[in-house]
Length: 97
Image (cartoon, rainbow, N blue to C red; front, side):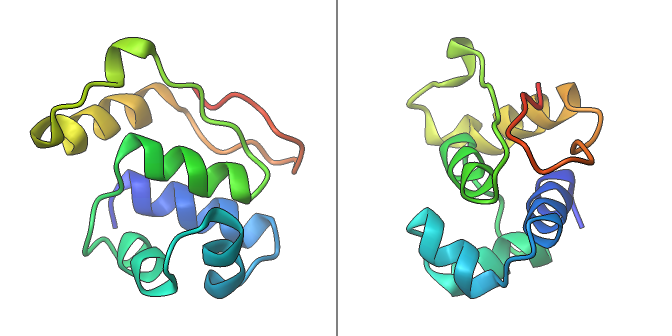
């Protein structure tokens, strides 16, 4: 499981949400949430941001990482996740980066 998958899964569990509820709140299809959590797909920075926000967390992304180049999405996400030490233990929205 990659760091993106771990972060999304942990945020969802700490928020007490099912994959279906996280999907509904974030506007993402449940099979996509499942694929992210299992590491079969890597979420874009925007998708990770949306999912974490739906779980009650806030991911602050540098404007430099908001590139339209889809080939860099996975590397950009790894860079963002590299800046995050861990998901905070409380449920209040916080900056992860």
